[in-house]
Image 1 (tube, rainbow over the protein chains, first blue to last red):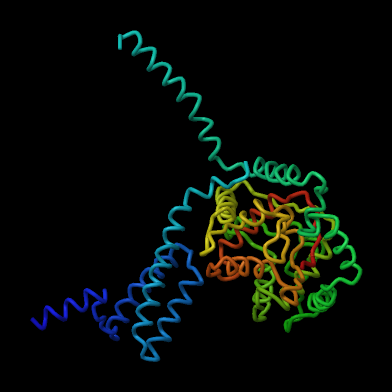
Image 2 (image 1 turned 45 degrees about the horizontal axis):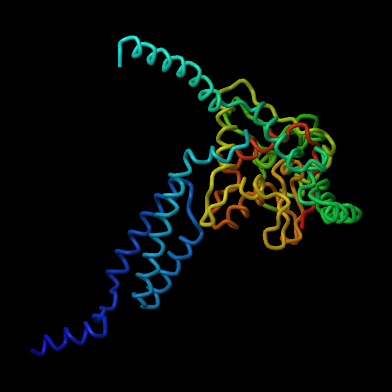
Length: 100
Length: 285
């Protein structure tokens, strides 16, 4: 009955309690972002914003704010993946812009 | 479908292929001469009032007000101090007694219009900046920064001795040279950075337009004015500095100065401006 009551409260408030991110979560998220950024580097197409997000993640982790560190790492990974997409799609598309 | 109509269809399809394939191939076959012609035609048609040789003045060629500003600026050019410094550096012997003049044809005087060139022995594009640092290293001196100060002064002096000479970049009969040219072209038109800009976004699609307070320069003749004094930098900058800052401004991580891509880009941009006079060192807002 108590459990049901708790679930009802969570459903009413629309939020389950979120667990604070751990150092392990940060390390995993950061490693994924780093791999994506390395791939972008191999395509010679890294973005400054990815680098900034990676730096922000490290800084947040150093100060013990792992929630922020994970969020910044995920942002960095998304940016790195976007830069990879850009480099891949531009492989042929650049020709559309060429003066002929 | 009857046999006769099937044969007719097949023949028509073959004929269509015979006509279509060569033109498709032609579009992809590198043709630097045609590229340069189309490039210059594009800008002269876009700005019919600007004389071909005036494109080397970048944003100052884009309208009368800007042109007047350029004329006034040229009376007391902000790059003058770099010219003096460059001249001193150029003539000052290295520790081994040799000078820069020993590394270049014609003693390095009046040769700016021939750089970059494709070195068939090394199989790569050699820019003036690269040649200067190689000269230093060959004579036991440490290389200098590619982006400003000494390098900007040296290239400013060398450009000054070539003023008015038409850009004269050669593509030797060497597939590697053509490949370097094509790589430069690809770099120029490829979008990059979080802002998704290519070099062409600003300097082909939007010259004469404002981007914040700046008036964008046309790509035609953009190399002829290098190196430049930029008010925004409060100092001189080289071609390497221009390329790396362009990349940063579009939120792309710049490559290292004089990386192959940048040298190839300079090769392409210089080639398509062949015939336009050297105007460096230049001054820009």
